[in-house]
Length: 86
Image (cartoon, rainbow, N blue to C red; front, side, top):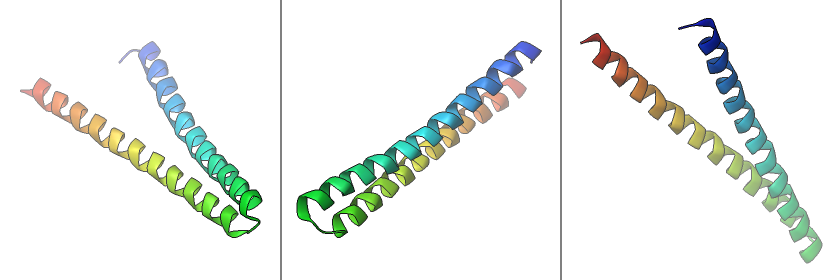
């Protein structure tokens, strides 16, 4: 692997990690926004708690999707490596 392709590969990995981090923060902030709206609508603090739980659940879902994508990518890479060895 050339030096240029290593740099590009590193940049792609960094962008993917940054994207996951941003999606986690956005999911939690959206949940907080939903919770704040529920709190204002109902006048109860339970709405805020429910919104935050929804946001955290969405963030966990984003992490799970990214994990599954990485596992699939690794399996395809491993299969290609084994095919090239034969």
